[in-house]
Amino acid sequence: MTALVDEHPHLGVECVLRELHITSSTYYRWCRAEREPCERKRRDAELTEQIKESHAESGGIYGSPRVHAVLKREGVHVGRKRGERLMRGADIAGISPRRGGFTRRDPKAARSPRTWSSATSPRPRRTGCGSPTSR
Image (cartoon, rainbow, N blue to C red; front, side, top):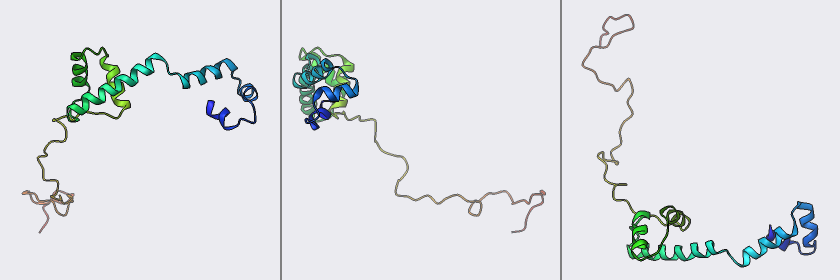
């Protein structure tokens, strides 16, 4: 919203706000919020930096449960879900040893599509009336 008013300074703030049916106090509150983030956003930025540090110290392996445990040991009080949200926002993820493991089938081996012409069966082929076919 503030970007729209900043892009068109020749229109004036009050005219734009009047057309959009927004009070001027709301606009100035948005401007102040951009300049001075609230306590929660400042704390989230600090926690994100601490999460990045502990994740980097683990070699990029630790996920949210272990990062939460490390922060708890260091005396940082942060909720599990808040830590998960901050990790998602910073695109930080742990590595799970259970995922992406080996496969039982060789992925390079191409399997031929199964069709009626290539199917094999020990039973003789039969026509629709039940009599065996010659082959």
